[in-house]
Length: 143
Image (spheres, rainbow, N blue to C red):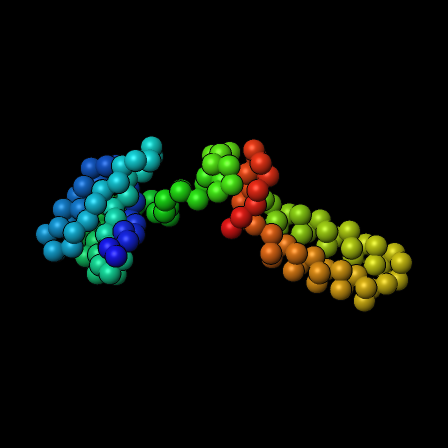
């Protein structure tokens, strides 16, 4: 099984990515420039060469302006159930905050604070199990 490619850096200018690729190639690290995304060009190497590639780029290309986060493939942005690309975040944190607020308010109003605590614990378990992504087409959730 071949070692998977990982993104070591990304640039807004494809020319900068090609310059980084040249530095890696001259250091004996095979690399690929992926310009598939509109606003960024990613420099990818095998997983085994990633740390050494980072060291080479830090030493030889310190003046190139990198993008803050080099996003990995967006292949998980497709619904595994229906194949739809209409995927959104499931908003677990906001929903959990709303549930906690309501449970605390009801617990304090009815003087059942201990029951409210157990309700919050149950909600926390439920929201930890819930998926992070949701398909707008079929409402499937997954991580």
